[in-house]
Image (cartoon, rainbow over all chains, first blue to last red; front, side, top):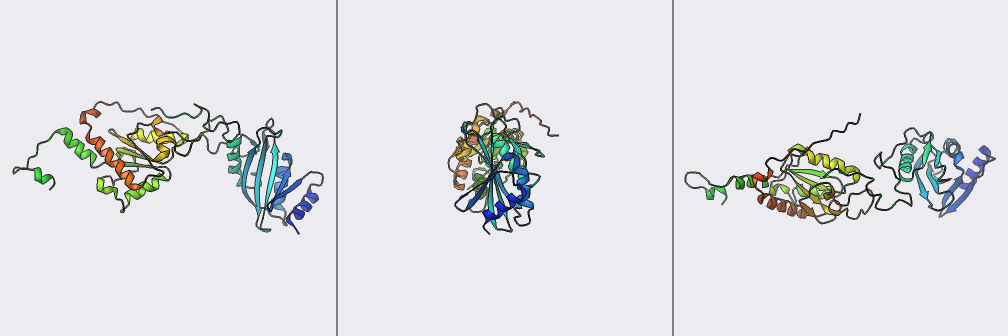
Length: 162
Length: 173
């Protein structure tokens, strides 16, 4: 059975009322879902014995700047059983800039979500330790947002006294 | 050939105190290897037998700043790292010198970005800017020779009565 049909079938069995959109680009299957479903869909994808997406390879985000839902959070997951990858995408609005944390599903997600929070300012609900990953803790901005200038905000990162 | 040629029959040599101190200082410059990124690899190569920094008396790379008088800042310095670099520099005893090794330390290099300090001279007094990305080990040796030249132009009294820098203690629980 094709990967897409298999996942579609499992989603139908478990979440019949929800809306899922599949798309494919160069053999890479993407599942777009509502952000409120992210945790239950992830735990199904990981826990279902026919799917077993046990490896969370990466979590990041995309800033679309002027789109209505400004951000897309992207999850790359991998199933050793099926030897195939799946991309999950969930849109996040700038007004309610948060999404549920999947660190309860994949432990790896902890640091990936911290990085995404640091760079884009998307808050992950129920995250065990949502601190900045790279930038200093007192830094106020999120550098990978499109409205952040390349050379930074002057004076936002203090230097030692000469 | 060497010193013995200058000695007379009584084994006495006359010189100035400055000349003696400069001579001993410049021939045993102890570097603090601040190898932060790829330039650090070239710095290690300069210390290894092929280039052999020991020929210039600087083979004693000390990983404690308290025993060093030359800081080789080898690699990209981010804003977050700049505080560490400065703290280590402040712990070095006077007199001390700094080599900004490579494009990143001298000017930010190819990292024209919000996170990288665009030249460490914004927070450190730099003596030599060393070009290259990364500079070859022989280039680092050239910088060391230039530091030695600079040391030989100093006077011992230049370093008298300098106030010690005040170190800030940051407590992280």
